Image 1 (tube, rainbow over the protein chains, first blue to last red):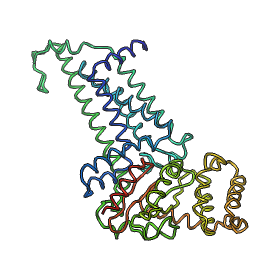
Image 2 (tube, chains in turn yellow, red):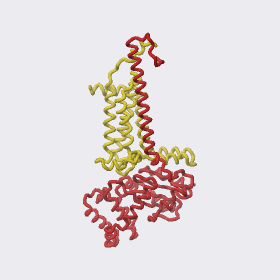
Image 3 (cartoon, chains in turn cyan, green):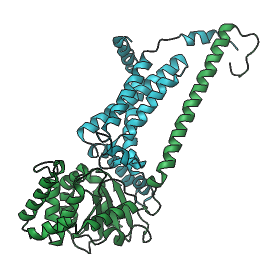
Image 4 (spheres, rainbow over the protein chains, first blue to last red):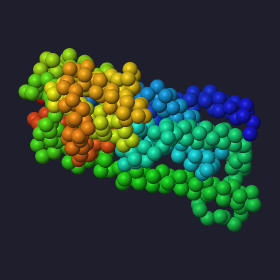
Length: 183
Length: 257
């Protein structure tokens, strides 16, 4: 793998405003999902409350601040990294799909797994306030040496590998060939 | 190439491309099915935790059969006026860094803005997280201080020194940890002999366990979890350390209704 060439490919894809916008939106969505997942009952009760809609929307926005208050600086950096890598992965996958009209299961599975693990690892695992604990797996985290931090790192590794894989895919000119095919 | 059938006039290259297209469609379908499957599995396993049955969280509904002041209060000491209209109950733990964060950054503002003005009352209940070795004894020490009327000063000392100062939460040796607890008792002018006896006999061990059991019944699995409300308007459950403005908005809405 030519790393320089691979990185140039990623940069070239992200130079397109549509793909960079998609990557940023996906990253923000991942951050929002991992922040909101912990407080779904609160969100439901807020929406169902008889407050005026402005107050409801303001509270939902304020809850996003939990991404900062419910993380240590290190977990916040890891979560931001996971989210942005997730965004780049999706942008690359869509770029590849539009160019080649093919999907590689292995590379995309690594990407989807990385994004899921990243979301699951968010929050304070040692205090049981994480999505994993929400799924009843708080006990598992206790046995991990870094109390769940390794999951964030696993997610980053998976997302980096799938990102490099996707960027390193050689074009097969499928689009050109397809144009010549007439049913 | 809309039909799934291969017309007989397709060349070898066209057939190859058609197969490739069908294969990628199948792959997309497989990924889609896998994602839906994962989501359904996650929902299946987390449904009861995400939407616990006994807890009615609709803000404006009365929740006499679900979460009530009686259920939340137990016999724990109240900070503030007992007849304050809004009750804030925190299920927390002295070794949880985020409970410490609430204690440092949010609770002083609550005390000033709502508790001292008689708008709200505050109760701290113990919920011990797995793997937090010293947290149980720290909770007992807090109860032992409470028995001598000094819960809140001990509570401040425990939170303030968990990871800084004495850093009791990181002490590997239990003996050193107990010595620190005794020093706190001395510092607060408690009857140290009585305090030591209370810790050694684990007098309030059952009380700490009861608090944690109450938390589990309420669907709590980690700390901090904060309930805000009253019997008239119901309770709101907030997981994790949220920005101060989240708590104030909910308390203010509760005060309005």
